Length: 252
Image (cartoon, rainbow, N blue to C red; front, side, top):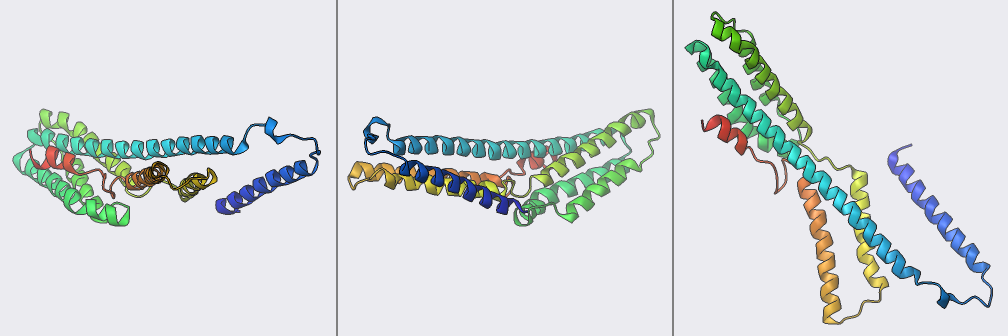
């Protein structure tokens, strides 16, 4: 059974149980029952629905913001590791040093100029970027240091390349949208229900009421748009940029 089918069955079952209980209870009400002695259930339901939906919206915004912050941290870690590779090869012979630095520059230029648009379009890392990183790893790992200073720098260089690979893999996991479809179903359905409750309160055409209803609806739409925009850390208007890689690798 799929999750969507289970969700639909659960929602229908809950509604059926609640409506059945209400109908049965209504039939058992006696003539001397005074409904004015009980609080207005509409106001209670409106308040609870608003509170619950506000909590759900807050959790969704916090989740996508945390995902964006994590993606930004991955980019910074990748840029810092690339910078360390370029800096630590200073002790290598000139030909080896220049070759590894050229590999790092080629990788950084491709990532910042070509892979960022690729991630935005396809939601994943590009194969070309993986090939360029493999070139860096191969040139670093296959060199046999002849001096003591070069031997001391070899293992830290290998570790920095591994750090680049790890940060790149984390960046790839954040390349696409992260919010499940079921969460979006709940957010959109909750927005429709919350905005629809305006009509249960018998809103009138006074300028104040119309202004408040419009602002409330616009706020809900803005928050949903904010969640959608930050859902893909590398694809929206508030997307993570490649400035860290450009600043730490290409401009030094």
